[in-house]
Image 1 (cartoon, rainbow, N blue to C red):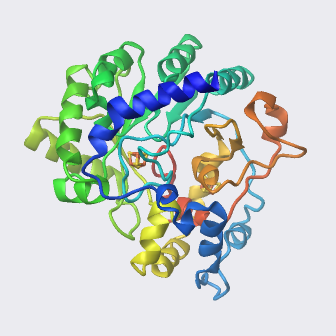
Image 2 (cartoon, protein in one colour; image 1 turned 45 degrees about the horizontal axis):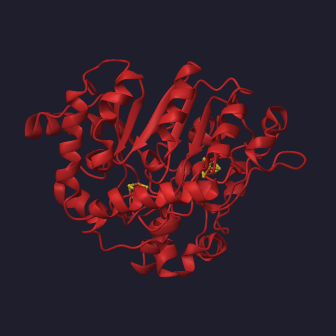
Length: 377
Ligand code: SF4
Ligand code: SF4
């Protein structure tokens, strides 16, 4: 079984992945053997930055929560089941918080874990299944997973990088996903070519526009509630996410006028100071100033909408996390008692946990807030 999956993954990599990544100079941290490939090093780097809070004390997320009367951070109603199908991606974007890339063939969710996720999903009242990666479409079980979730009446989200839709095996996906009512949340760093290509690799912008046209042709982006096309954008550089509503208006006008491309809504995220974005912050000398900006912008009104409060996040190898960011830092969920693989999921224990936080959490609570669904305040 493991051998067959490995062969399938290798095949996806050889046939489809290398083509679209050839012009990208960035390599994953893992492939370069970079120190920040280690989650411990990332956490140490974040904790070691000299940043103070409004009281002039060493900035600690837990202290900010306490001052807002919200410590410990506890979950609300579980609504979203997020499944990370792996780290394999056809791109290697500079800001990637997953450290994904064409070389990450070894980290792909296998069928047994997909089935364990579905069994766990059945033990929750989650209304939404949020499928992410890497490029989740590259996982050989992607379509089966979508079908199983749709059969269960779930709202399904595919977090799509757009360019993957141009690879030969995936060109039918816009229509295929549309037939199943899957929402496509597509990431695009900037409304202009230069900003997008700087972050994702030369030629990405052109390919993204082509993919968007395919999605529009398949009925996405035109106001159909079964073919919702959502844009997600994040700043280029050490800034907070732009104001969401104004950015949506601006982008809708730009894409309509320049390319006759339509989308339904836009969500704006802060860049999280982890993985390859953390590396960029360190190398560009922006780490302390960015963290100071996040800490100074701490907004208690964002706390209720934090994704860790209504989400379970499962990694490619079946471990359970409070959110995608904690997953990348190997900060596993810590409910009362032992909690390991998703096959052992205990909904009551998960509901009674305390959410694991650290300094990166300032990224979610700065300004208007930032979650997988956009601004939280
Ligand atoms: S940001 Fe998205 S598209 Fe870019 S490398 Fe990471 S997972 Fe792939
Ligand atoms: S990173 Fe954000 S979503 Fe995750 S635990 Fe921290 S505050 Fe919650």
